[in-house]
Length: 328
Ligand SMILES: [Zn+2]
Ligand SMILES: [Zn+2]
Ligand SMILES: [Zn+2]
Image (cartoon, rainbow, N blue to C red; front, top):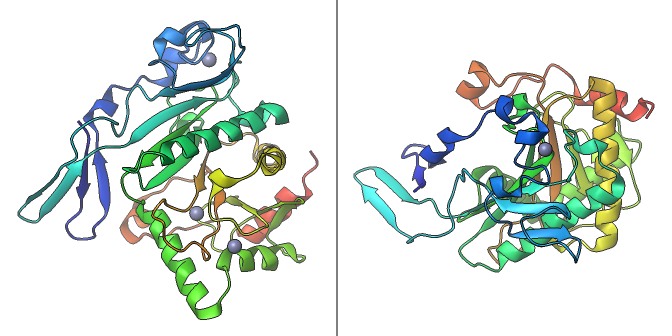
């Protein structure tokens, strides 16, 4: 049973999940016959929780276009007795949560940007559907969708997939964003993210691409070279409340941003994640959901671990200039 431990000094949460050590390595699954995400191998995953599939087909058999299964080696588990424990200075709680894998195509494709716009739209709709479904369980406070693409970015299987985790508390990173945005709102009466979008789209030097409903920018204090954020231009705290039309255009914008990265950096490994407001019923006027795309080009090393500061060798203005002008 995983456990969520609090660091007594900083309050940072860590998931202790010993089962995860049994995860397979990429080599064993790079052949399609052994890939648990390829059609025909459905029995290699736990039973599906959701799929877009032909009406003629049956669950856990071929005939699907996007398929969602529980993570075989979950960081958190859904069933269990909720308990907290305190021993001296140490505090922990049972590692309850949901950890699912979204298989994004029946084809053994390794790059999400290689999927067509219709398929990426379907994937985004599944993200939304899983988040809406997981919201129904009031044990979860925050739902995080993320992708690891390429072994250096942490992917243990290459077949296009992403993951969704429902957490019993909002993670530190998200809380820090919400606190900062709330402070700005209190002082200025405006959403900080809306301000950033305005400043970056008005002839901004950090603009990557602008679409009718979306903007892709390199953030001002980018931690990583070629870091890109995609934000809805209209203020919205929750990804999962995005209407269909927005998701169709988001698929276009996301593919466009990833295609630019692929052109400029020759298919880099990367992570992306969706930051959406937690489900705590609190005021949300100050928070604006977004996608962060983090290419894995540099190692996070001693200085970063020791200081919490990042050294980014590429100015975001230069990264944005290259991404903006690349021929697709
Ligand atoms: Zn596969
Ligand atoms: Zn906003
Ligand atoms: Zn964020």
